[in-house]
Image (tube, rainbow, N blue to C red; front, side, top):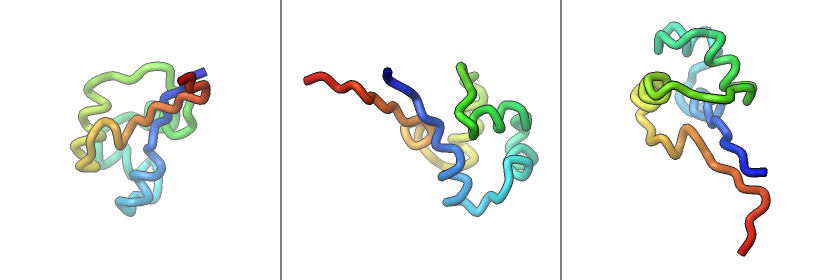
Length: 74
């Protein structure tokens, strides 16, 4: 089954953000939202959240969200 992976922890590591709390304070995104994203428990994302994270990390959506298709049929 295909899955969308949130690459949040890697982006945090690359940008020397040590905790979800620190990221929350710097972006204004709630701790609950960020914890859900980092633990891959999120079932939906708000465009505002995606925009804030992409702006903060200076990244494209494809760097934040990665589509994983385990059943590639050719």
